[in-house]
Image (cartoon, rainbow, N blue to C red; front, side, top):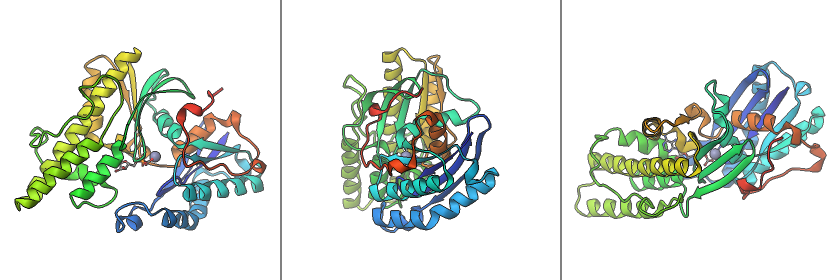
Length: 344
Ligand code: KG4
Ligand code: ZN
């Protein structure tokens, strides 16, 4: 039962074919990061136009790779939100038009649900129930997942998302966009054990599972200004700042994840979303949670950041809720995960 999945919520065009019995049959990705890099962030209108240019050839290639044609598909899944509205409309319109031509139903997919379920794409997949740490450019969430489609948000960021904090801090240090991978690479130049600047660990002293990253960003900014004024903001100081920033974020995410597991009584943690590709976060969660008898699961790094495989997979799981393309295109800039219906 192959399902075509289309992701176009931000700056990656992702297309994949997933089959409930045979698994992932193909996946293709085109990243626009180079185009947006010179603007220091995603330019929504340029993103929409580039999705239009790339989406059809990617769909053709993904179908070819999978050895299926449009007529073989049981459904066409597309990211319906949350995301940039113009970018979402490109994927949604193309998916709906093709589904109409192929006589297939469509499945509008929630982008964060797709991220959250991405670890199930791996051979070593988690069993339900679990707690998910969803950390991307737009969201930082702790979600109690009782069963597929049953999501209770138990913690969230009160201001910046974790990925956003990485991106903004990277910008302060003069690194390119997207900042997360660049900042992580710079931090590697510093001695991981030496937390030279010891930035605040946001919200750790407060009870509860919410995050806040804007104070940390301000602390980094003040430090950068101080070093600039003293004329000592050299490459080595920048690497130490990157290291101390990453240490503070990772420690916060690890402690809050631990707290979430204790509070819910679950013993499985799933990490997903772009920041889930961060090597130190993965290693640190693995180490500290395993020591407490908990298991940690995450998708391969390329399925942490935006991709079509997670959309095809989530679409296949929600095939029972597929509907006629004649119902129109669904695109929602904002869409709460808790609004989703359970998966039958
Ligand atoms: O999930 P994603 O691809 O897109 C959204 O749905 O937002 O996440 C992108 C975010 C960006 O903020 C990016 O800087 C961050 O994930 N990111 C990382 C790493 N790779 C991507 N942050 C830290 N370390 C990484 N290795
Ligand atoms: Zn994403």
